[in-house]
Length: 266
Image (spheres, rainbow, N blue to C red):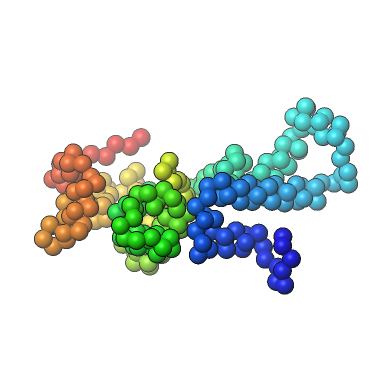
């Protein structure tokens, strides 16, 4: 709200702070949550303004409002739900997202694939390089400590990686097939690292209840694999797979790869 020659929006101001070369702003957890609180207050104020603008009454007294609250007035409840839909994390916000997804399933049927993309920030060389660059720290600085100190940069870098991968590999590359529709949700783990849950609707994918089981199995086998990569041909991929997946997974997948498939569906 400082007077400027060119006015900027609150979101532009927050973005300039969090992406500033001076990392003190985004590393201060209290300041970040203060910015979040200000954003939610603006969203509530905007919701109240739109609510008042859409009501037929020009004015509403406190006694009338309390009467509607005490009598569980359905119209008032609907207006309050509409007002809170824009505030992320509220019950009304997630109810709207849930309704959107239900409409997609009702229109296009059950999604074909469910994917999860997790952020292995400790094992990502590009995230490590990015964090050291934006925070101006030496290579000897502990990467785990740096991720804890600057979770915003971790989240930003991973989000850029996810969107680029999803656009180039999943959508344009069509490694899983032609994607007709998709839906994703971004979540955060306790340590502050982000991950994405994704639903995909693949064109002409066989259905368990409709198509031949062998056709379904062939389609799955063509897209989903579970084996240890060759150590000589792909040493880095071999290291990653053997480091993060327990041996029991490969033993179970070995049985599946030998044809011991079974489909259970209701």
